[in-house]
Amino acid sequence: MPAKTILAQSWVLALFILIPLFRPILLAHNLIYVVYATFVLGFLVLAVNINIIKSANSTQLMWLLSYAGLSIVASLFAAEDIRLDYLGLLCFVPISYLIGIWLGVEGSTHSFFRVVALIFLPVALYVVYQLAKSSFSYNTYYYWSPASYRIDYLTASMYAVVLLIYFVFNGRNIVEKYGLPTFCAGFIAISGARYSIIYAVCAGIYILLRAARKSPIRLAAGLLISLSLLIVLVLFNDALIARSTNLVDYSLFRLENLSENDNSVEGRKVLMERAGKSIADHFAFGVGLAGSADVLGAYPHNMLLEAFVDGGVFSVLPLLIFVVSSVWFLVKVKHEHKAWCLLLVMFLLGAFLKSFSIYESRMLFFFFGYAVALNRREQGLAPCVEEVALENSCQPHAWKA
Image 1 (cartoon, helix red, strand yellow):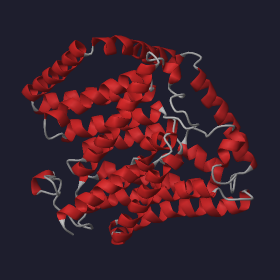
Image 2 (tube, rainbow, N blue to C red):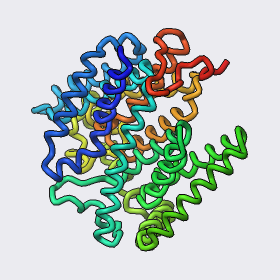
Image 3 (tube, rainbow, N blue to C red):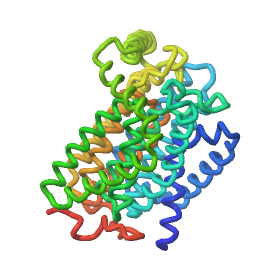
């Protein structure tokens, strides 16, 4: 396939994966047709590349499709009417997995993440703009839009961590290597998202230690460049920094409150208790697609627990096997992309076991697919295509002995 065609397809699929990030803004401004157009384009790209299924791990794909299929079948027994909207969201889970495989096989990784960054930046700036309008009041996070839809700070911070880790490892110029990660780190700091903050700090420590071992001079230069960017930001936007201090303070307050009687922590405990009762009453087939939100009063904030409540034991077991095998495939691989990919998979897995719904887990299953593609390359079961637009993931020097 021509290089330009692969690039264009990777851009479309990046938009497809990022729909949970920019969809609330489009909905708030009555631009839902843009979301529909992205759906259609994404499906067309996948239809053109339907042969990518041959590069998937057949056993793993079977477990994932078993989860999706059994969830639908279980809903026939548990619910009067299947929620068609959530049925569509459920289909995006295996689709995202196949997109990850396609990206790993075709080798357009960097182009994909550049598009992700180009979408994330205006969304993040929109977040900061809305906060600035209300003097950076944290309590206004959920009330920016005139419509009933909202931009979740957790979702935005999740994508910020993904971009931070990827471009620290794979940035090809000063803007990508230092500028974009610095912006993402600042956004995470004011987000109030505790898990993202803690993980970003831990990943940052690991990255610094890894960089110091490889090249102390390059590490020192990188820290100086990042510090210089922060100084320039303070000099030219001192008022902005002063107002954003309240958000940084609130992030610290939320971290300090984590070990105390925090409302979100207590709320998760209540949800787990309700989920336990629901599982006991509907152990085999669950309560139906997206039924957990109605039964528990909110979605369970844990994708495995949500799958158990919605689809029962026959639904959650294939999903659990799929998740464990996906992590194991990535642990075994020896490709140079393993370090950042493993960091991202563990971050996203923790996020979807702590906060997010499985129906919005496209980025996580995308990386599961990407990890499988790397693993099958190593076994010689998938083709190795040279990265278009300067990507070198398939060059001989990219593999470790």
